[in-house]
Picture 1 (tube, rainbow, N blue to C red):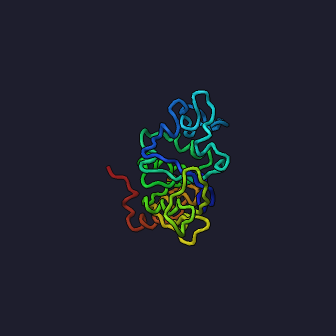
Picture 2 (cartoon, rainbow, N blue to C red):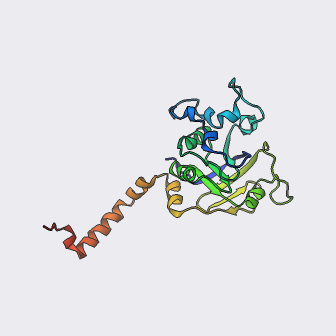
Picture 3 (cartoon, helix red, strand yellow):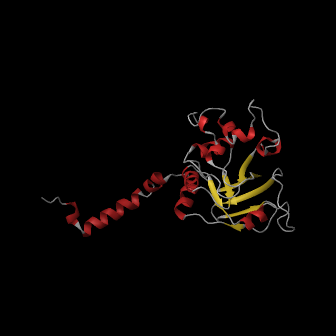
Length: 216
């Protein structure tokens, strides 16, 4: 999978609690190949397009200022619902590399990690700080269609607005942190330690040679 170390980009806010995977990518698109050049269009398709397949100019990701969005700010329980990995594929096809939310659907959260997309859990109060036009002052939240630049550092597990001097910390399982930084899935990461595994096994068997003997 694609490695994730640091990310600087544009964040878009997707309002609404409990946005499920069927809203992220409708079921009728699940059999489409990931090589389909239109795969990015399937992201939030029924929210972004009308029955005539015309783009809704009011939807944030349809606006020119957000054409290069690579960070999403979402609400509670984002990615709930069915366990369709295609929801992550659609986000990646659009260019999304990180999603920030107070909580996620469990299966969706794990699918993100397995595909190189960083899910960041923050308290709502922290998201409010990130979402302010000026994070250093004031208490007005960002308007849903107002772009904002952010920087994510997976090495230090911090995120901040570009113009802010106060990064916020987030947590991630150290195993998945290493997988993402190295761009390796679970099997690849394990195999990357093959030399160390071989040394351990050789040492272990030298002290317990009977383990290699068959018994009848």
